[in-house]
Each structure stands twice: as C-alpha cells, then as structure tokens.
Image (cartoon, rainbow, N blue to C red; front, side, top):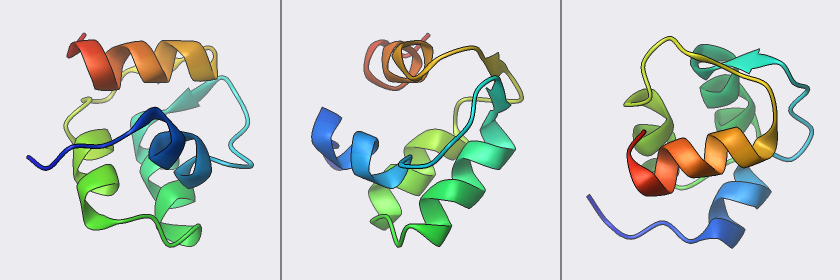
Length: 64
C-alpha cells in the first residue's frame, strides 16, 4: 500500500464526528475526495468504532 501521511488522513477525515465506525469514516473520506490510498487504509480497519481522531490515527499508522 502506498504511503499515507498523517496530514492526508487528517484532511480526509475532516468533519468526522466521533464516536464513528470505520464504514462512516470511509464515507467521510470519500466525500472529502481523499486519495484511494487513504480510503483503502480506512477500509482495512475492520468494523471497529473509534472514539477520537487519535484512535483512528493509531489504528491506521500502527496497524492496530
């Protein structure tokens, strides 16, 4: 998978309200015209619910 920067993720998820599950996060990213690499990374998070943007970042960049 191509590199995704924290800035890319932040822009992609702008406007997301937490708690939020990965399906909703992916929809927000698509609505924000995020690059395919970002939406794919979010899609691989599973059906977990995230309580904050920090939790999303941790899951995306540390594979948790």
